[in-house]
Image 1 (spheres, one colour):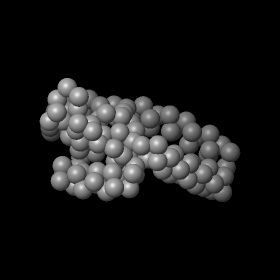
Image 2 (spheres, rainbow, N blue to C red):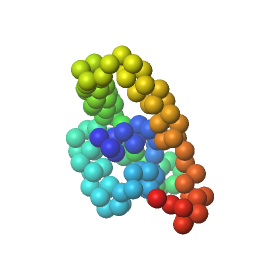
Image 3 (cartoon, rainbow, N blue to C red):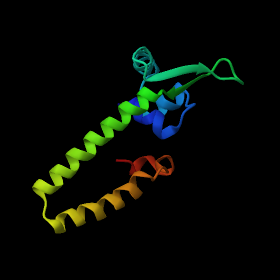
Length: 119
C-alpha cells in the first residue's frame, strides 16, 4: 500500500527512481514490489515516450480501487475509534491538531537545516 499510495500522491507517470527517493527505498526492493504490483494488475509500467531509458509507473483502475478500499477501511476505523474513545471536546481537539500536523507534514525544507540541528 505504501508504493500504491506514493504513486497516487506523486501522480501517474512517476518514475521508479522518484518513488524510491520519496519512500526511502532501495531500488532493488522497489523493483521487486513493482513486479508484484504489476503481476497483480494494480500498476502498469511503460517506457517514457521521450527517453526510452526511463520507465513510467501508473495505477490501473484495479490499483485505484484497492487504494480507495484501504483508505475507506482506515477512515472507518478512525471514526469508530474516535467515537468509542474520545469525548466531543477531545474529537474537536484532535481535528484541530490534525490540521496542524498536515501543515507540518507539508514542510519539505529539511535539507537546508544545518546537520548539527538534525534530529
